Length: 158
Ligand code: FES
Image (cartoon, rainbow, N blue to C red; front, side):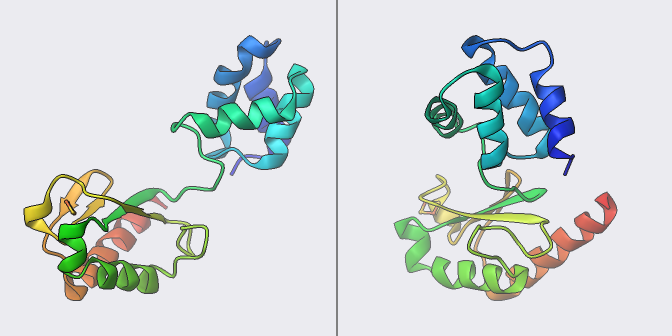
């Protein structure tokens, strides 16, 4: 993660007033990977906008994240069709193998794990989507395979 002060100066360069808020937040997230609370307070102070408004904008748009994100996004469907075919066990196994904390991030910071409701592929349930790639008819054994594949990708990116 980039240094907060350096990221703020890049994000705020040439920015003035409330109209600059969204592009500033986009640049800041580009620098830091997410929008930490202290950075949002600083943006509010330097742009002369109430902090509540800055937090309001940051939480309104789905493009912004107030929590750190992993390099890979793993979404587990907990919709009815997937649920009855064992999705909760798949989620628990993914959490266990990836050592996911309460913030939804794996201990190594590689993966963000999210729960979703129906991904429109019920016949393939239980379904997991990894960076947009569908993994259907998941089993605990396939979870092990998936976690191994993610860690291999992680090594390639390191
Ligand atoms: S319920 Fe999981 S894809 Fe529809």
